[in-house]
Length: 180
Image 1 (cartoon, one colour):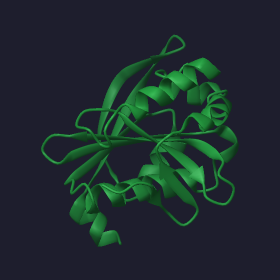
Image 2 (cartoon, rainbow, N blue to C red):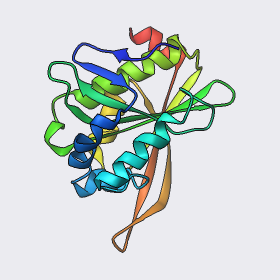
Image 3 (spheres, rainbow, N blue to C red):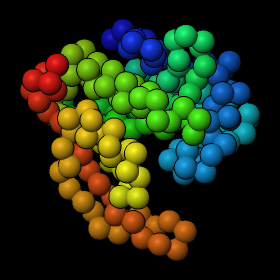
Image 4 (cartoon, one colour):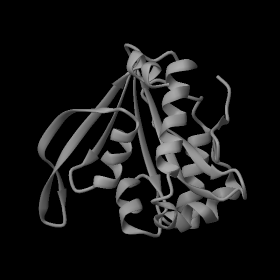
């Protein structure tokens, strides 16, 4: 399994200790911190996270394996992309991008690169992604990638004294190949 994954503008790669300042910077926004509760938004917390991630074998079954989303032009780490390999050739992806990098196509490009890799290299059959119903930017990325809304879990997440629905999207390898 070859890493990094390269796209037109991005490099998806394992995190390195030198990425800690960039991690702390993109975690600064509450929406990113909420999406990545496993990472404490301090230098010590980010370093602990990097060390934990580097202890995993790439794409180990049922592990949240995170890749840095690096802008190839300048080496800036803008966020992370999560891939989880499940049994029965299933997988999950997720992404979190620093607020200042949103709206520029980076999430779509990173997720597309990861999906392509998952189907071609990891030989997965189906990939799913989840987001909350109050995050249209995220589910619009999924829709741009050709993922279909497969379900809606009503009031599945509590946020600041309000319940929000969780949306589940998925795509099959043959659907992805048909789009390419």
